[in-house]
Length: 62
Image 1 (tube, rainbow, N blue to C red):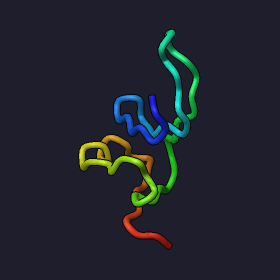
Image 2: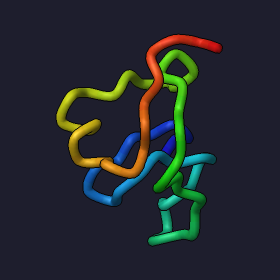
Image 3: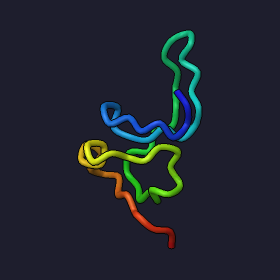
């Protein structure tokens, strides 16, 4: 899975690429934090924002 993947079911945002070709692998997942939306590789949908209650999405830089 590529870094920046937003996975509401898993409960977070993946920090680094994880190669799962040969099965499950460990990875770093952001579960609680303030995140600037403009810096994400994929824009979070309203459903994702609702599911990830402990991640606070900030609209603008600064």
